[in-house]
Amino acid sequence: MPIYSDHPIIGTWRLTSFTERNLDTGAIGYPFGETAKALVIYEPNGYVATIFTRSDRQQPLAPQATDQEAMDLYWSMIAFAGRYELSGKRLIYRPEINRSGGERYALAFFCDSHIDWPIAAVPTCVGPNAPPKYPTTYYTDYMARYQQRTYDLLAAENRNAAE
Image 1 (cartoon, helix red, strand yellow):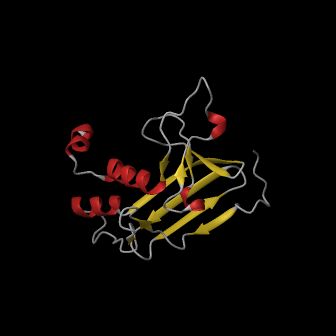
Image 2 (tube, helix red, strand yellow):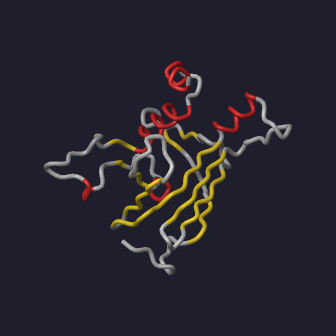
């Protein structure tokens, strides 16, 4: 679907809250701190840029970060950019730079940031001869696995893969 310059999504959006709820206990958590920061910029040409940072993110003390400072900086932010499109009520991201080197489809969770929001394949991308690659899951479960897989730099399998 083409994006028009007067579409309400066009512009710069600032994060107002970022919480997660433990589905077993009901406890509310703040994965990036209670005052996490984020900006999302949607352009009418179909490009998007996003950055999330922890509320307590610290700059390095010197121009060259120490190893620990670099790790702390890495763990304290999420950033991506690429193309996006609207499909019905869904916002689909197509990051242009990613680990697999291929196109990826993702839903913008911040638009429907309920922690119990189901995450499923886009209906127009599946069918009898094209089943979903992954089963339906929920936002909290997905983000917990994503954060562990993506940002757990100290896990043995991640250390070995990087070497």
